[in-house]
Length: 231
Image 1 (spheres, rainbow, N blue to C red):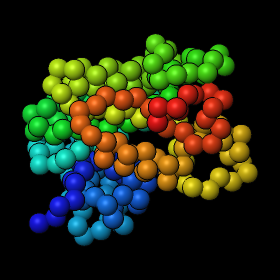
Image 2 (image 1 turned 45 degrees about the vertical axis):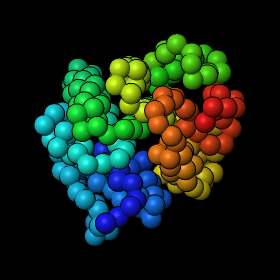
Image 3 (image 1 turned 90 degrees about the vertical axis):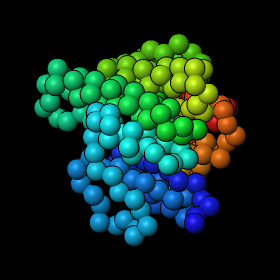
């Protein structure tokens, strides 16, 4: 029997999920959730779940018997999508789905959830050129950011009411690489490398329980826009 911690990762096919699979597979056992497409490069020891975040019963079942839930699954904007349709996708996935994940953790007595938040939570400060700390009042720049404010607040509630450890990582620009080409250099002050994302996640996994924390996930040039002194 493995003595390694088991992770349940939603959104495992996405950019962040792919990076965590690559960097953390030698340290942890993984149960990976995919919405539709299953990648070809999975290792034989991976447990696979194909489901939808809005499926409450499915999320409760998928969260059983793990040590940590890493919630990465999100609704993504697609070019040409009507705003009303996109907002409904966010309601179903980022809001209802996030509630389902936290309830799954509570019901299954999973001690820790790592929530993929976003710098969109404080996007209006960035737009105005204001340096942001983790504890400033949220000022989301769009409905996606609103959904991430909800996720952080829900995580705080589950920590306070049920003793769940919750870590919210406000992910900035994440191209899933450790090398930046010249075309991306203007975005360096918002860039989060794949390695740094994996290490920040591992620190959250190994942190003692119970805790609640919000951290900006960003690598080079972070001091210009966000305070990462608590990360």
